[in-house]
Image 1: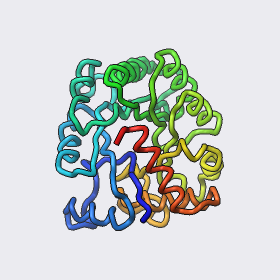
Image 2: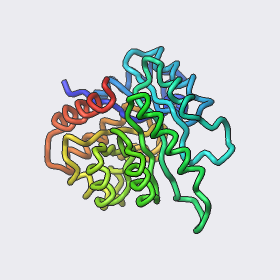
Image 3: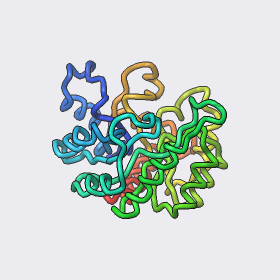
Image 4: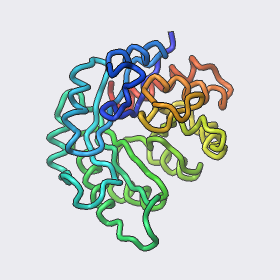
Length: 260
């Protein structure tokens, strides 16, 4: 049977109302849609223990550790390299992040040096921990690539990719994977769909980014890891291959990147 891995979700933020508040019921629903494993991604130091507990509770769940680039300067605990490396020793932690750069809501000329430094901190922690990076990049194409190159970043993934083919190609040239979320199913995502046709099959991951970005046909409703199923079906249609082929390739790619 086809199997999928949701390579990026936020279990601590899910709306479990459709499952009567029961995480086990959500997990069963995901499995019924072929999702056998998932990576619960950390967005700040305060929720890192919560994310890790989900990975401890469920054998098929893994975790990351990191602080999202959109968290403002001096908001919460700012991670150091040593802090990230220490938390990455947890046996279920398989990645550093999500990290990266996000200029989407910034003003022209706004000082983003705190995001740069935070990104560099995560890159160094990933190198010391020998773990891949989960990279968030939005409206920051040139700086993202420049920092990755300047600091000799190791393996990783552009998660929830929404950028151009040129950006995807730059990431591929650095050895990165490209992960597609529910956005690729949206009718107005034609440019992204063209990118999804071009990325080599052995470099594609799939994800939900749940609870955000619910794919068609459930756009606007609560998202959960099971809906990776619809992302995979969309990619199969776009690329003219079978759903089973997308499942096999993306599952193997995810296992390769995160050493699952």
